[in-house]
Length: 552
Ligand code: FBP
Image (cartoon, rainbow, N blue to C red):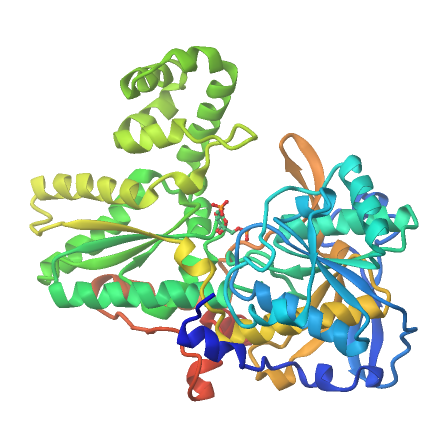
């Protein structure tokens, strides 16, 4: 295979480990901390995880290792959406395991969690793994979204582990995948299989974070990639002075990506779903809010600007949430009748018939394309896939209508030429930034340290991340510590608590204190491309979100 000059150069990049993990392994001691509980619903979580609940925090410190050495055969799985740095987690795991004993083995399960249950795997070699060092993507073994949750799947997993002599499984995934890692760990322990399970916190969305996990990997690189593109668009807008750019950003429900990109690029408007929900804003209020920036700038002769929109926005607008839920119910209850509606017009007429008056009014103001998107593409649970709804077009069309009203009232006299963008997949497989290269390698290396000292049901935790890598702290946190009970598809389920944007947190406060100025003036900042080589002050810095979160 031919490689680009950057890819070749990145092969020789040596990721930075926390100082403690650079020591000889027999000089690293696993120190136990306090016993843990769960984020909420302690009694229920304890009852569901009788063998793994309440385990102690682990931190690695200089000392004498108490590890009883044995041959380790570790299985690794990449789960869910791609996030830059996944390859380095695997490389860190591999290097640690081979450093401990060159006879140890790393087995990669192919295509996500189903690789484990279907026994599709490869055994890593130096030659194979070296092709993937410090590169983006999950193509080293592929990923998938199969959930490991049924007893049948767990039994199959146990059989496959026994067949290969596997001593531990590492699951690299987001909140759902690591919830399943905790359930698998509990099952393996209850069945006395002797197989440990360790998770690693992945997702560009940034919603797997808490006191113990400061950031999920991939968020840094993905937001830097989107911010580069947004900055470039801002500069284009400021040069041509004729377009308003509406940019939707990936990130599922949480608005962390949009907020970080706003902090990096200072656009005119950035909508934050969590705030919209808190203020119970309607579509019309959102349109007025954006239109005000457009009109204010037009008054100053600036008919251009940039608006950022988080992917999950529509789910957080109460009236749209209600509409989506009615559409879901109607499509489930009247599936046969809906099948008979052939044209877009028939489908819209069908929906008008069954919606409540309130939701029908919201449905009626949506552009035709959006109406069609609301009725199409349901996921396996019968829900509308909100990520496929072009909310950037929805917001811009509502703003256009609002501006026309304002024009009639003599409150607006500008030109409004909107352009639309969606940034998501562009950022998920970028070459990991130095931060993600270092962080991911450390997470993988540390996961092996946890395996060696017999932990199961833990997340690999590397902390103090806004300091230089030498000062990072390494350890492990019981996954049950991060769990609570949530209602999912009509059932109470133990899950890792999802982190949404906190409206009283430093990153949002910093943004909200400045946004009025950004809305009126042109305060754009241009972050440029990720830099891999050069001064540390440019190449090794992580997100503004993390920096502000760690500012007291
Ligand atoms: P994860 O939670 O699996 O990390 O997903 C990240 C993500 O990129 C979301 O931001 C996005 O909504 C989703 O994946 C898209 O899913 P798909 O890759 O299946 O299109």
